Structures are given as C-alpha cells and as structure tokens.
Length: 350
Image 1: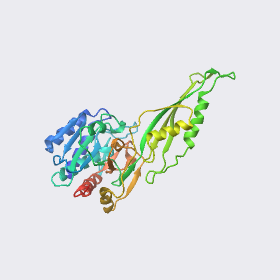
Image 2: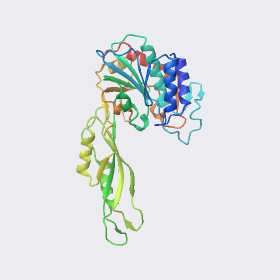
Image 3: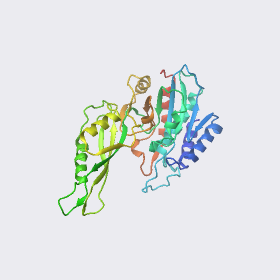
Image 4: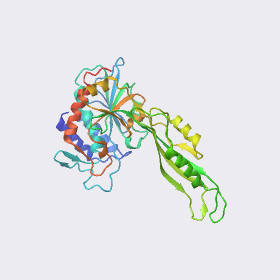
C-alpha cells in the first residue's frame, strides 16, 4: 500500500458517511478493501475490524495499532460538501479527514509494510467505531476479542507529536433539593440557591495533587435546569459537572471529595473513562524522542480512556481542525505519518 493508494483510500473513506453508531457502510467498504485489495485476513466484530500482521506468537509481546472510522455530525457552517473529498492543492477537505481518517490510512499503510518484516512483537491492527461517543460497541468491544495487549499506538491528530498522557472523564449529574413555595411569600426552600453554593464550590475548588504532564484536575459545571413557573420557589435544581481527571486521582476519589463538600445528590454517568500515562523511559517514547519529536500531555480524550494497558497517542493532522467546519488534512501529512509510523515501530523492542 503506497502513498498514492493511501491518499486515494482516504478520499474513498471521506465519501462514505459514518456518524457514530452509523458506521456499517464504511466498515463494510473497509473490510472488503482490506480483504480483496490488500489481501489481508480480517476479523469483523460489529463494525470493528481486526488484522494480524504475522499471525500470533504467545511468547512475544503484542502491539496494537488503533484508530477509528466514525465521525461527529457536520456543522451547519460547512462551506464545502463534507462528503465530497474535495482536493485543493495539498489540502483534502471532508468530514473525518483530519479526525481520524488520515490516521486510519496511515496506520494501515505502515501495517502493510511492517507485515512484510520480522519483528520481536505481535502486531495487530484494530480499526474501531463509536470513538466519538465512547460507545460500548467500539474499542471496548474490540478489545474483548484480542489477546493480551502490551502497548497500543492510537492514531489521532497530534501533528506527529506524541501524547504520553491523556486526561480521563467523569460526568456527574447533580440534584439540589429544596421545598416548593410561593415566590411572593417567605416560604419554601429555594433549590436553585442551594445549587449555586455547590456550583460556586465546583468553580473554585482546586484538587491538591497536580500531574506533571496533565496539570490539575479540571471541574466545570456545564448545564443547569430549575423551575417551571416564575412565581413558584423551585424544589429541585439539576446541574451537570464535567470533570477531566489526571492519573493522580481515581474516579471514586474525585467523587468522594465532591460528596464531602456538596449538598446535592450526585450520580456519575460513567466511571470507565480513565486517565492514561506512559513513562518517558519506555522504548517507544525513547524511539520517538530520538526522532527529534516532542511529547505532551493531552487534555482531549480518545479511545485510550478505555485501554487498560500502556498506550501513546500520535498521528497526522491538527487537533484544532477536529469537529470544525471545512475540516481538512494535507497530503504531505499523511505521507509523513506513514514514514513516521514505520520508523517508530520497525525493530522496536518492547
């Protein structure tokens, strides 16, 4: 799979809509392409695809290459057809071009080259769905069908800089309780006012432990709902807190701190999206650094949050283009990524 084939495949992928949980057509196309154009043996798990480079040797460590085929919905402000894969010079415009179809085709091309070699590790390519919604039928389902993984390379737009840490997520639905009464009289207990105390605490609280790579845990109240009539004291106020965790705290530890300081009842939607990190001494990080490329801690979340093993996040493109109107990728970014992945992984000792 050469560079021109990768670029052509990128355009074909853009042309097939694949909103999260609606990836069937793209998964079908990509499975057929892998099997009939590239000659790979492919396993299908829902809308996830799995390919092994050299078979499987249980005496070797296993490296997983992963990226996703789903996209968010196109914004109304698009000025181009999000599914036309329009090319203008070095730019290819299209929904998912940057996030993360460029990573998908770059990882596929590198995998295709590496599968012709002998490596000291098992190499698996896992293309997943539902990443944008952290769905249970995406990488979480895919991993149930894989052997023990020792390391993953997750393809996301990072400008080929390597994220060696990534924040996790916990969304907490909060309910402050009061007592209804007439607004004209001094009666009732205003749940909205009680909620304001909790919201103010969320706004100002600083978690004690700070991550060297990810900084502080970030807690933000993003939604609020209270009252139904202007003249009735609300007996309930609902609000939602978005918490971006670091490796310094577990979900339960953060929740316990919140319960100690807040009067509202708290219900986390999920405690499965964890923070991740890998030591700078790890061979893959050292190989990356030897290539004169930088490392960073990522505040944006990927499928790393669902991987209970060491992982890094690195791929072509720019995170700032993701989920934006007129999303694009540069052809040279894809070509550079293919060469980068091969250089990063060829001869790597895990």
